[in-house]
Amino acid sequence: MPVNFCPLSAHLGMAERRLRKAGVDSPRLSAELLLAKILDKDRLWVITHLDTHLNSSQASAFSRWVGCRATGVPIAYLLESKEFFGLEFAVTSDVLIPRPETEVLLEAASTLWPSDENLSFVDVGTGSGAIGVGMAHTFPNSRGVLTDLSLRALHVAQRNVAAHHLDSRLSFICSDLLSAFGPRSMQAVLSNPPYVSSVAYWKMSFEIRHFEPVQALWSGVHGTEVHVKLLRQAKRTLQSGGWICLEIAPDQADALQECLAENWPRDWTEVSIVQDWAGRDRVLRARRV
Image (cartoon, rainbow, N blue to C red):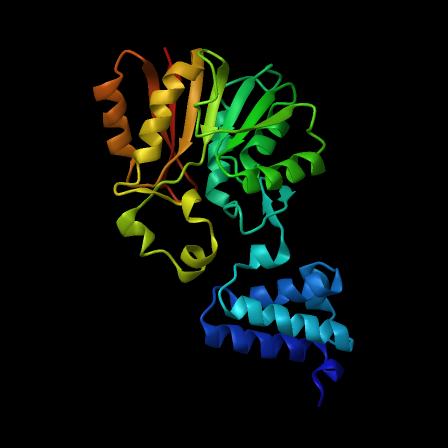
């Protein structure tokens, strides 16, 4: 039977088998999400309408997308969208795909000021703009600057800021971390910096290593190189009493705390580590003296 005369259940079954054979993550979920995208429906609709038929153009498009997914292209890049912090973000291969563990960074920051604080913050290495947009939603009176060294990433961030109607409160700078900022210019520095070490990078999945931007992942031999540079710069950029919140790998907490204690013992206070939902060290917080 020609594929365009098959019900959705048959299309999903064939796609799942193809993706499973290719070894991609979550083959059934991937197939359902791609089919929902083709039909301009949500995944629940697909699951509850398995007797529906595709037309020939839809069947051809679905086959092409499944083929792309089978090569390892992450599902978020194919959908050009990713949910984060309860919000939808456009994503392209120019930016890291927002991940649930980064939501812990926003939750850790949300407890440091009252929700009506007139907060000034910078989202360093913004990528899709997820952290900056999340902060602007959390603190409705805040103003932020989103930075990235990649102009292509900043273009994606600009799209997301516009989509969430935050143009009046969020601006953009192409900058190497905090190098473009003056002394005592911000109350908060937030970042999900590259923190993958050389060894850890080659242990990451094929999908991540081959499709997500390496400059957003790899930090150096130890994985903490960008953190240390950021801490040094933030010491100058933050106002007295300001906070820095950095996402970290679970095995980096001790090294970064020791770095603060050894190099800048008089500059930082209230240093703490916030754990994610799995109980793993995930966010470093420190307050500028």
